[in-house]
Amino acid sequence: METTLRNLPVPQRVLFTTFLLMIGLGYLSAMVLLYFVDVEPHAASGQGLVAGIAEKYHGVPTRLEAALRGPMADRIGPVEKETVFSWIRNGATADTFETVKPIIDENCVSCHNPTSGVKRPSGEPVPSFETYDEIVDAYLIDIDTGLSFAQLARVSHIHLFGISLLFVITGYIISLSATPAWFRVLLIVTPYLAIAGDVSAWWLSKWEALFAWVVVIGGALMGLALAAQILIAIWEMWLGKASSGRREAGPAFR
Ligand code: HEC
Image (cartoon, rainbow, N blue to C red):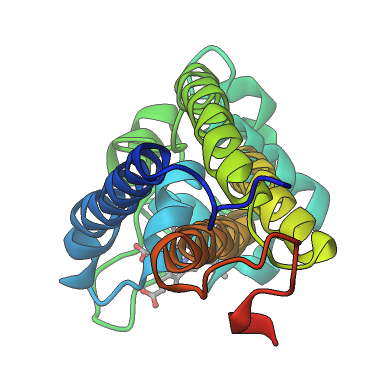
């Protein structure tokens, strides 16, 4: 007789059930943590989940970058703009200021100097950008480029090792389900694809903030697949009809 979840001895069903329930609680705790780390701190400033995640991996644009992506966007060509952004991302140090000084002098200082007389709409003079200190003091305090590569590598390997092992066990349990083979394969493979997409998206978000969406979608997909594994397995072990001894379609899918 083929082993299925239904005809497992009671001690094994109890083992699998308690394990699956704890994993379910673990996932819910992870969601609570996510809420307190990535959602709640940003909610006050009106930022949603995706914006919060983008900020975590990609960082917060400095005021200089924000101005060059916003009101000052037309003052400078795309190539020069990228040069300034990469200078900022690399720490905006005094040593490397020479790479951007000619760009600022040529495109910005005509207005951004103390004697230009150019004013903000509020009437105050625009900030001066003649020297490194003026730019850094006013516009580059606290450069935040998100998680470092070392931090990303740390969280990535912990998640990949830990979650992969976890899904070997839940996947093994669901492989004994009476649902059609293609469905079991789908349920076994989906969480692995989701975690691979999720972790890749952390790295990609560092480069492009839009990948924060993939982080959210990957995480949600993993949660859904895990929930399906847990609910189907527990249902079949305790609530499904007694097996006639041969593999049949689970009642849930008839
Ligand atoms: C034609 C004049 C002019 C040029 C050229 C110019 N700016 Fe400005 N800039 C302004 C004015 C006017 C404001 C104030 C806008 C406002 O407050 O609405 C401003 C504001 C800013 C701010 C402040 C934004 C903020 O919220 O505090 C930054 C940063 C900035 N400019 C950067 C630059 C950079 C970098 C360049 C060169 C690529 C540049 N600007 C070229 C006129 C200019």
